[in-house]
Amino acid sequence: MGRTKKRPKYDQKRIMEQFQKCVVEAYTFGMTEGSGISLRQVSEEFGITLMKTRKILITAGVYHTENSDQVNSMREHGMSIPEIMKATGLSKSSVHSYLPYTKMIYNVDELSLYAERCRMYRKRKQAIEQLQICKEASLECVEKYLWSTIEIFSGYSFTTVKGLRFRYVVNGNEIQIEQKKKSIARSSVKAALKVALGKNGNISELKKIEAVDVSYLYPMFLRFGLIKAEKMDIYQLL
Image 1 (cartoon, rainbow, N blue to C red):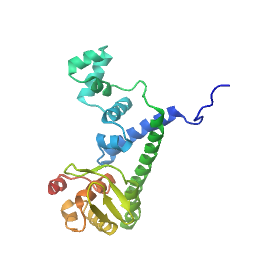
Image 2: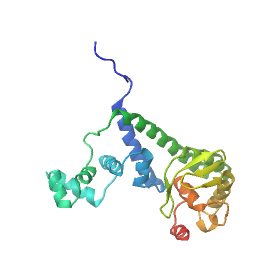
Image 3: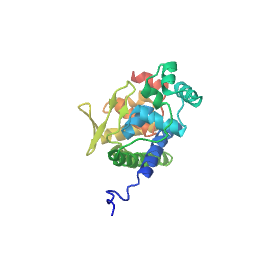
Image 4: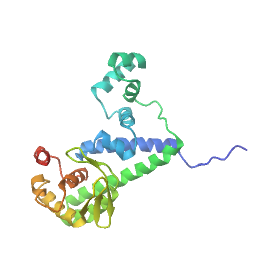
């Protein structure tokens, strides 16, 4: 008799296919919904490198740049990796990152992480979709689901307008910013929400709420699709 498989129901191929699909969904969802998600945020969402994220998106045909088009054109015309490196000045790893996967390399330990991160991504996406439905209904509906959405995004990497990256944890009725000794009360979030929805996310109005640190709430509300970025808002935060 052969050796018994440790994980007879562990479908590795299916997990990788789902993971790649989640990465593509996260990137394209952010583009179509205007939620402000970037390539770096997609990478951090799933705990993978920028190069791997880009390679997955290129494989799916949803990411194109001048460099990626040039590298792929050269490859299609029979040029080797060293020849492309010489012609473009790119490193070997960069050249490979602009080419689609023929087979994604992974180890067994990564699979469970990928499966969990894909599950969390879908949970967060569903929360945002619910908020969008609520926006069409009433403020009370948004208030009901906003805090649970904030809890679901605990540990997510946000970036302020000034470029400060931060994560938070939820402790009871407070948001605690991990990198700073700062907390935002649930009541303050509720007050900011009313102003954001009532003024279409105008930062000059949000800044009038002294109890709220808008620099942290703004990227959160933006990611949740509650407000849309406007040039005027950005200038007022700088």
